[in-house]
Length: 73
Image 1 (tube, rainbow, N blue to C red):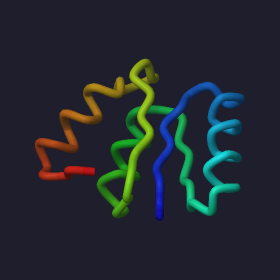
Image 2: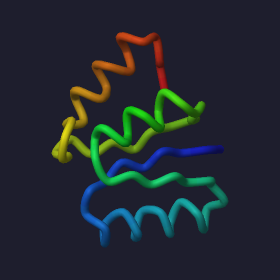
Image 3: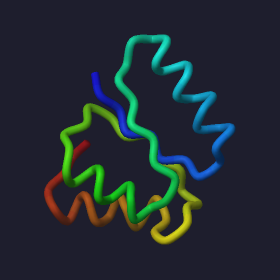
Image 4: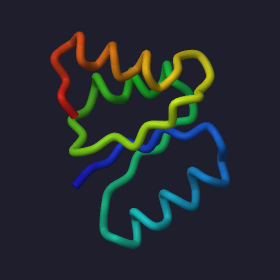
């Protein structure tokens, strides 16, 4: 299972990534909304763990853009 983790706090991102990796998930981590949208549109993910307060685009803007493009992840 491949997961996109979107978190701008490095310590929190590392903590979550470690737990997911130990549970045998493949995890890509990005720290801002613009990169998150790029990753989510370029790759098929089984799940996206999405922070709301992010630089450049917030989590709700990312979600809205993904839904507008037909992504249901």
